[in-house]
Amino acid sequence: MNGLMVIKIGGGEGIELEPILHEVAELVHAGQRVVLVHGGSHETNELAAQLGHAPRWITSPSGHTSRRTDRRTLEIFEMVYCGKVNKGIVETLRARAVDAVGLSGIDGGIWLGERKNAIRSIEDGRTVIIRDDLTGAVKSVDRSFLSLILDAGRTPVLTPPAVTSDGVAINVDADRAAARTAAALNADELLLLSNVPGVLADPNDRSTLIRSTHGAGLQRIREAATGRMKNKVLAAEEAIDGGVRRAVIGSANGQNAIARARQGAGTVFEGAFA
Ligand code: ADP
Image (cartoon, rainbow, N blue to C red; front, side, top):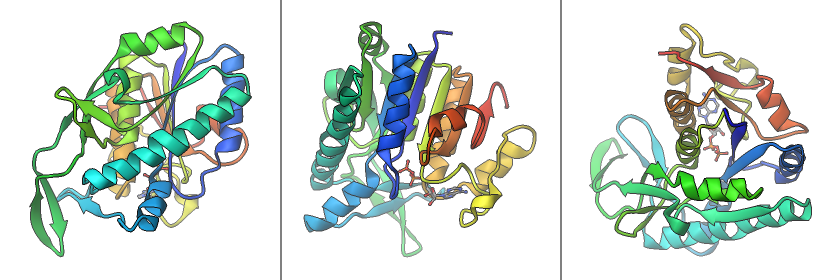
């Protein structure tokens, strides 16, 4: 154990970054090693609409949703993720005396991924094959480069895209990239913080939080998680399988969101639950 935390802050609507970055700064000042990963989906949707390239979504036959990423979408995605959101977070952290280093997964090839050649998408009840999509998944993480930054007392702030071995930028799910990163760095904890309190049995009712993965809980969680929540559950499971001690899907909002997630407020995944 090396006392490393990977914290992924979602990019959904209504997430307040200030309080959570304040908490990150306090943790770093207290000597905690942190890798921050962030999204930017809501702002990307807004900018895409403003630029006349409205967002579109792909729903796989198993119910996973992902952003339809053509070249223009990737460019807009980079403007928001690598530009506005990443630099905004670095600026906020630096103003709080954290030596933050903002990087996307393509920089230095930190997140090496594989592009999906053919994606099956359900459109109007029919299966369609999409071949020109720039999406994929992270397959390996440059552990030594990230360790170099951490060992220098700096705090990496990472965001998609990732890059393929032949140098193509790909949109990857930030939750799963964070899980890969946590596993690669032997992190103790992975916190996936977003605009919901965790996995809800009824996504429309915040009082139906499923807290634990023990026993029958995991199956219940897998079934309850629809749409974008599916990726978070997969990410938490992948982190645990990769040796991370604890993964929590929790809320990014309010005071002390990180402390609350660490204390178990949210959906907690722990140890061998297979
Ligand atoms: P972020 O972009 O902040 O990482 P996402 O928007 O990708 O977060 O994922 C969170 C969303 O998942 C919620 O806002 C909610 O709409 C959706 N969701 C689907 N099923 C569930 C569920 N069972 N519990 C909670 N949220 C769910």
